[in-house]
Image 1 (cartoon, helix red, strand yellow):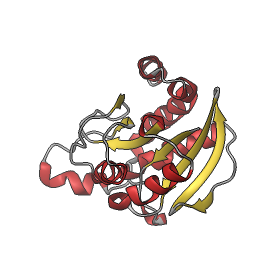
Image 2 (cartoon, helix red, strand yellow):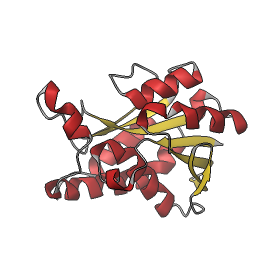
Image 3 (cartoon, one colour):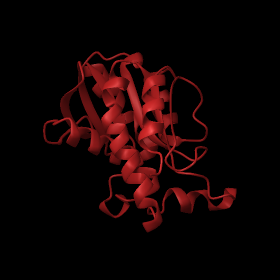
Amino acid sequence: MLLWVGLGNPEPSQARHRHNIGFLALDEIARRHGFTPWRQRFKGLVAEGVVGRQKVLALKPLTYMNGSGEAVQPAAAFHKIGPAAITVFHDELDLAPGKVRVKRGGGVAGHNGLRDIQRALGTPEFWRVRLGIGHPGQKERVTGHVLGNFAKADEPWLARLLEAVAETAPLLGDGRAEEAMTRIALLTQEA
């Protein structure tokens, strides 16, 4: 079984924040692949399904971004899922809007959700699906950008990105990260 974690904040008023793109990606994967309805468990919302040939437990922590590990660690421990079978979908300032990078391990680049998961698991060796939201250009504008809603102008690229991530999810599940990134890039090109 794989554990796929979407990062975000649980308040309804924050549902369209850039910081919640991980929740949005997981919602689209669950919808596209016919997962069970979401239910509360492990300090989060969970749904189960099959993506390609892999059984996946989807988790959206309700602990707020900075406490994401409080949901991830117990879910992983209960299901005996090691770090190599955990994939975290999260917002990435250092990628242009709509761009995606998939990698295993690495630093947290100031992302408090990743930092807390790394702390809770005791290792950085989990997969990350970095979903580009772009940088506002000035350091003092980062918090407002991340905690701000997607603009109307963002909707076309955001919809393409979420659909592409859901479509390529079987490649991610099979550990074919390079192939998934290439396919996402093709699917998100503007017409």
